[in-house]
Image (cartoon, rainbow, N blue to C red; front, side, top):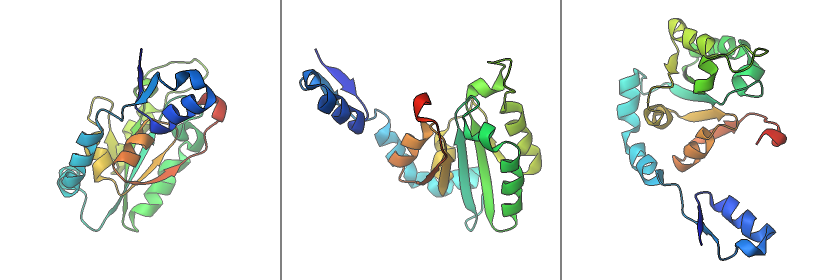
Length: 170
């Protein structure tokens, strides 16, 4: 029997910490990696589709869900700070996990509606129904929490800033 693991680091970790996995765990690579790498050639096309000029630094902000996500930790201050950078040649994409568009915990206010409201302030918002790839490829830098988007940003060879995220939640 063989188990395929797309993350090389995790495959090595499993084998090193339990020798019984040596002949079981096989690193397979991410199945969409080639598509992401090919899409990097469309950087200018995607920016044009998003209405982003050549000289603008596009910052993609991708977040997961729950109170530890960067959108919950930073709150509305994130949007105020981003707005202050617009006059300095920055534009922002905001993309939050689909769970943030519904009530998933009575003690947590979902941030999806607040993220969506940023369209009215001139920001780019990726809704959950939209393909993430054009937004990722068009970005110059990615700010991310422990969303799976950070792994996709690595494949796309993007500069990444990771927010603090509790290890026990990973």
